[in-house]
Image (cartoon, rainbow, N blue to C red; front, side, top):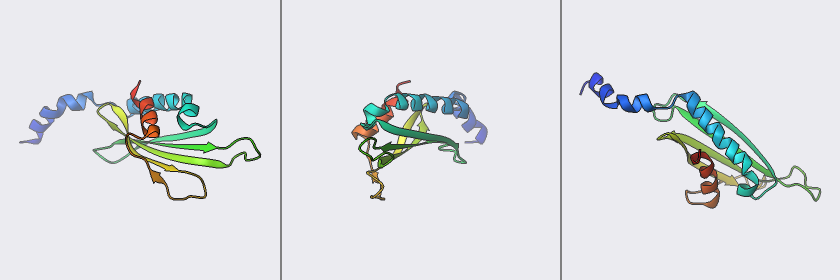
Length: 133
C-alpha cells in the first residue's frame, strides 16, 4: 500500500486529532478538578499540586502530562513536614488524558516510590478528574 493510500485511510483519524493546545487546555481542566477535590482525594489539608504538559518527539505520545502532589503536615509544630508525595504521568489517548504511571512515596524517609495500579482508590479518584469534563 502506498503512503498516499495509507494517508487517505487514516485521514479521518488525523483530522479528528486534538491539537497540542486543545490537549493542554483539557489537561488544565483536569488539574482544576484535582485542585478542587484535593482534600477529599488525598485526605490532607495541606496539598500542593504542580504540573507540566510537555511536547515530545514521539509519534505515539506527542504530548505528555506530569503531575506532582505533595501532602504536608500542618499543626503540632510539624509545619512543612512532607507526609507523602505522588508522581503521576498521563498520556493523551482516544481524546482523553489517561494515567500511564502513578507512584506514591510515603514520606521523605522512604526514598523508594511505590507504584500504584489501576483500580487503586487514589488512581481512580485522580483519573476521574481527567475523564469527567
